[in-house]
Image (cartoon, rainbow, N blue to C red; front, side, top):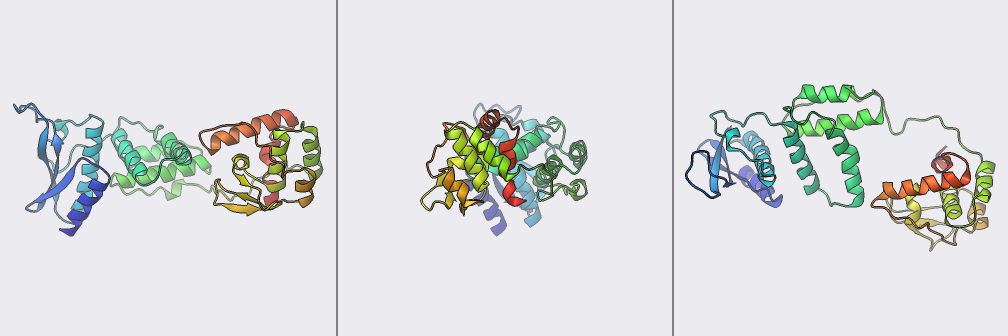
Length: 308
């Protein structure tokens, strides 16, 4: 069966230590497993697990999920024969923590691990999943309870809906959480008290000469994100290339060319900061500028001025 070969190819590519095989009209799992309870054999050896699932395209898809679960349990030394030595076609309902482990494993099989992708995983998924009752079976009811516990029309609520919908689909459930997302939008206008050009110029002049004054000037003149000041190319000044950031590489120009010239922003003075990812770098920029400018949250506001 082509579908069966394709499923086994995916499992092999993902380094899942469990494969599928068909006997008659049913599907079985095959893996190197510990001896069954009551078996006199002392060593691990190749064995099969009956799934009771029909050998058809839909069944292959379901059995592949079960193979991933068994593979994850083997990797974590959590495999127990008691979960599979039954006549029911499937193993007993798995706990939320089991599906979270499968989700994480699948997540990193699809993308490269970088400081930025690890931040995305932690923010968009790990921080959501850790709020779930991990030792309970995964059901739509449990996931809905987790979503409705979050204030509506918020970014966090939207994040919960997206992450838990993906988790439910992985487990073969049919989630319908669209009505729980609320009206939050990343493009929704937010009322802000923005500084005037005069306030920005006054604050720049108030800062002592050095890397923090330069950083403030770059963020004000070019509307840069906090962390982007560490990833700039000045070869086309006053145009500046952002070579790494939240968005794709791009060239930006100063809101007012006279700021770039009079503030000597081409004399690069990058602050001596380090961080594992963009979020760490950004946080290390904001506080020192606010402390030195005596204008709370000024650094967070000025980069939004260009979009108003």
